[in-house]
Image 1 (cartoon, one colour):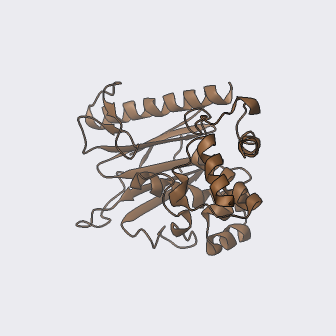
Image 2 (spheres, each protein chain N blue to C red):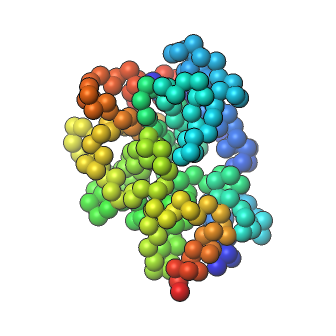
Length: 75
Length: 199
């Protein structure tokens, strides 16, 4: 799941995919703004056929947190 | 009042972000000095529980910052405010489907310039979230706007007023909490622009 998130992130940020770890913070480390982040969320929703409520988005601040969330969501 | 500045291109994404934030802080410093005679220092700003910065010694002054590829802006007021600026470019349909309800999507897709229409909706939503101080924790689809009327209005947030500017490839939206006692009387001093973008 982390690899999947990495591949989505690099569509918006000019970083080496391998440099994105579980602790990589979307805003602090990658400077993703809200529009970029919602674009990633929207793509994930579309790819995985799930809905991510906005109230739950604020807890997804790192790549690891998003990976864990998606794993649970897919169960 | 709103303060805006065009930014020069160049540098890595990270360098551009750093530079843009620096310009936003410069606008805030200029605005505070110009309007209130307050000198902005590193010690002047404090974080708040919601993550939105505030002025340590002046809780009565509200401000918000935004920057995008090519523009930085800042809004200062005597009540909660939010501001968002975006450069108009092809929009991401995934972002649109997540953030916009069916009515807004229909309006965007049917617009003469769908990308511009999307970023008008997006910046209005963002400016409201930033005025509320809660970030991406509110259902974006519930912050729905109609852009075909005379006044910008969000039915789910009647206590807020909005203004939208479209300038040379950018869209800028500002939002202010209206005093329930005085209503929407004279917000022109808040929605005035100083700087590069004049709408």
